[in-house]
Amino acid sequence: MSESLVVCDVDENLVKKLKEFRFRKETNNAAIIMKIDKDKQLVILDEEHEDISPDELKDLLPERQPRFVVYSYKYFHDDGRTSFPLCFIFSSPVGCRPEQQMMYAGSKNKLVQTAEMTKVFEIRNTDDLSEEWLKEKLGFFR
Image (cartoon, rainbow, N blue to C red):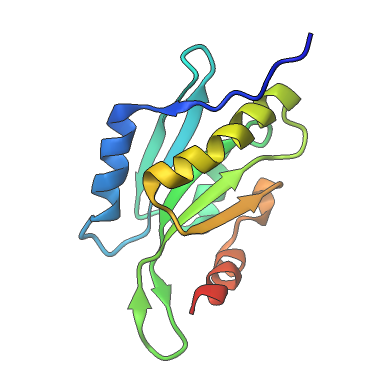
C-alpha cells in the first residue's frame, strides 16, 4: 500500500500569527515552531519563543521528528548594520519515519509561500543548528 504525497494546509490561526510575527517590533531573537497534525493534515503552531538563541532553539527541536521553524534573528553585518532577517528552517532529521518526512517535505513549499519566506534553510541533524551555521547561511544574502 503506497501513500501519495500529502500537502497539508496551514491552520488559519497560524497564518495570522505568522503575519503578525513578520511585522513584530521587538529586536530580540524569536521563533515560531510548527508541526503537522497528521489527522487533520494541517500545519499548526507547536511552540513560540522570545529571546532565544540558535543554540537554545536547537535544543527544542525533536531529534527524530521533522519541524518547521520561522526564526527572527538579530544579525550584525560586517559593515556595522543590524538587520532582523526572517529565516525559515526545515528540520528533517535523519531517522524520521519516511511517511512523516514525505508529509513535511510535501508541505514545506506551501508553508514557505504562505509565510512569504525568502531565506529558506534545511537541516538534517539538529546539532547542525548553531549561530555559526546561521551566520554562514545568511552571509549569502548580503
